[in-house]
Length: 166
Length: 164
Image 1 (cartoon, rainbow over the protein chains, first blue to last red):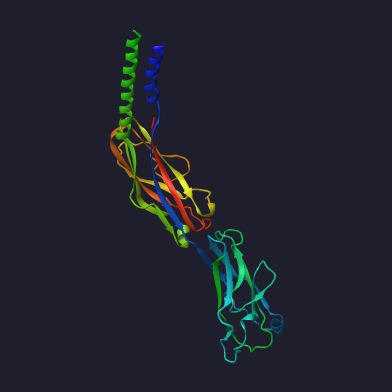
Image 2: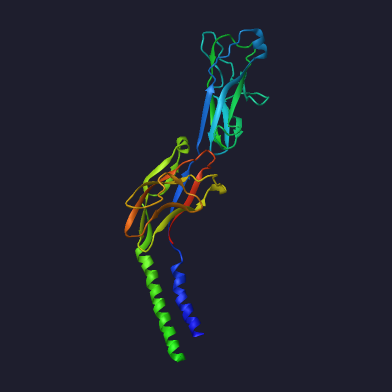
């Protein structure tokens, strides 16, 4: 019995000798990411020309007038509004009372246009992701329907697109 | 006679216990891994370009290794990780990049940028030596995207030295 105990005692350090020693140390850190959004607009430089009475009567449509690319790490909303309530005539004799609402806008994949005003209106919403994510790159159609009320001439109006967090 | 054997047993046990104790103390005194943080391990992502470029904290970490008793291997892992809304990236954006070391004979040194994962990844092996060697590393943040929601991401890195 005693010999067995002695054997056990001599085996004990052997078991320690084959154990694996480990030494560890930990350090901590932090990544702080802000809300980041970017908007790229391409196109929109073509000036629609109205030259026939049919154009005045039914308006003209410019499909895919503008291409929009959104990069956002938060769910986003793109809004649009006119900077002025009326178009500004660039030529003599032009009307000063042509409202922004003669210009309508919509995403190309939707059916209904909505007239512009100085109030911000939602054009499209989407999920976080790069412009390669589904729905984050799209085109915009515009429709210009002045009717017969306003004088001929060249007109201008500024549009403001706002990308914001939902 | 049994009393003599009992005495031998007790004394033998004490001597062996003492030997083992000294051995353990020696492991602590002459074999260690020290992680020195040379700059805060903090990244601030505030601009669109920050999401598409690599951030580098140069010479952010120095690992000091002394392995007197036997050869050792040093590993690193992402020990803890927390993100906003439970977001978990598909791949780790944190990397260690070896810069230099003072060891004349380190082996298996991973010199390219290596990602920190939730399991141990070998950084280098060091043959036993009775002196301290330093291994210097850049700390990188790369591979972010617009999928990373805003907020604070806290993490803990664990470095482990093992001896066979």
